[in-house]
Length: 189
Image 1 (spheres, rainbow, N blue to C red):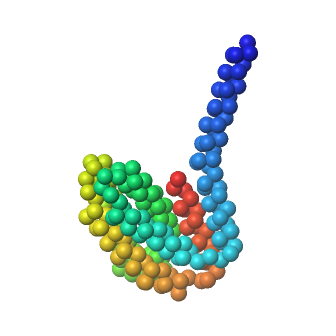
Image 2 (cartoon, rainbow, N blue to C red):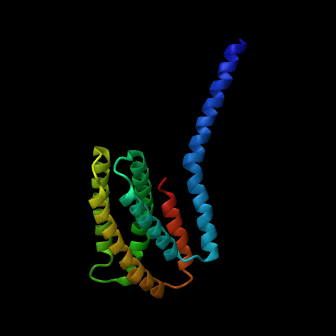
Image 3 (tube, one colour):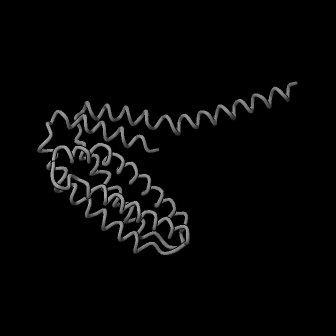
């Protein structure tokens, strides 16, 4: 009886650990991000500064990818996954929060639609990079193309789009926008 009871407790502890891991791994990050976003909203942080920080991290990852040795599949895989995750979070925030505001506030012939198209081109290049990674091929040229596209995209956002939105939007709205961006990014695990 005792050994059966011991196995039952061991199984319960194991299942409890698995459940705890799922809770901490899947549910805790969005909760923490929601709390952080509420704090940023209260502090009045600049939503565009958050996105610009993302831009710096994305460019840094691309620089690391460009110099990663071809033979280091593990390092290249880690860098690729980090870039893909960061780009997904960032793109989701821009596409679901910022670009609709661009369309509303900047009402032009192309109210930000080309920005969505550039995101689609980035996803196509990510697919090519992933294929090259899986095949053990050199990805330098494709990483360079992606970096050039992202650099151009960032330049437009940081030098044209974001300053225009700052001018056109009421300063009381900016902290709320910061919270929306943080919440949107938190949806991507």
